[in-house]
Image (cartoon, rainbow, N blue to C red; front, side, top):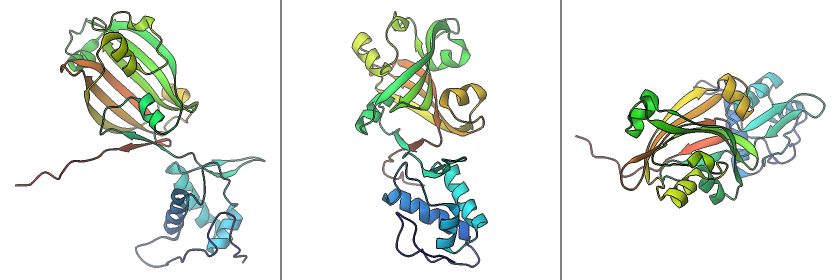
Length: 261
């Protein structure tokens, strides 16, 4: 069996441990994930063929294929079929830091990426029960509802669904809505969100959101529900943002461990 090292990998294959409590494909998955994290395999790189990788690791193609399938499920690689197909290192995931309240545009700018937005709808409607409770409104009070696809360097990564009290933000829907909404609230109304309560829930993509985000129906997603408050303490936004699981990673910093009883 040919054990020459594929391009971009180490000169020697890792030692594979065979025994109880471990799997061969899991070790290969972890080793390749570490190679991607270390930059030995960069985003966009075409990985060696399954045949070459299997020979180098000294395993069957079925075992190697299982490891690559898990990497694809984690969003670390993408797989394509056809003449120009193969396995490619995926673009690095975007980190969404929920420790501090910063809009999507601001977080991308910090990472040197270009933020964009495609407005799907912008309407005024009665709040309804959930938004009324979150925004401290009556159910028949009007809210401005804005649905957008958020883009990172032109690629869709999230669907934002935000509701704002219409009486607090008159004329909001007549403004440009393809930039930072938080900056718009600050500059035009002096009501930039100051703090927020956010909750996270793993979900799967429905038909409409899958089409907007260019993923398959049922793809893993992360739902972030948020109530944002102005510095004065009044709620200014009720949002349900849906992030692609293969493109984003949620990050939170914790404070000191609370003392127990």
